[in-house]
Image (cartoon, rainbow, N blue to C red; front, side, top):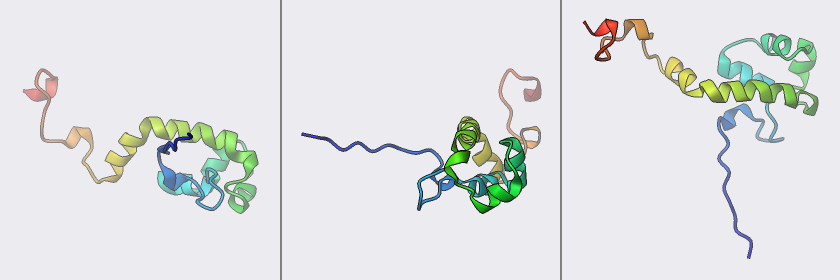
Length: 100
């Protein structure tokens, strides 16, 4: 008997829900950068990336960005939450120079 498994996809908002592919426009929005920056980063021309942001030909390059985002997603969420920079935080960690 076949069983059904659920696969959790980190950052589903980066995928086009219609095609299931990574979408350069959604990635740019998540990073608060222009699509042109994504195009330059993946070595493509901006007009083409804007016109077809989830093209199959972009997927290998967009996956690299996606993997990097996965590594830093907690940091990005913390930054976007409006938390103050570490240097402005009031609490300190015992045993560190800032704890004096």
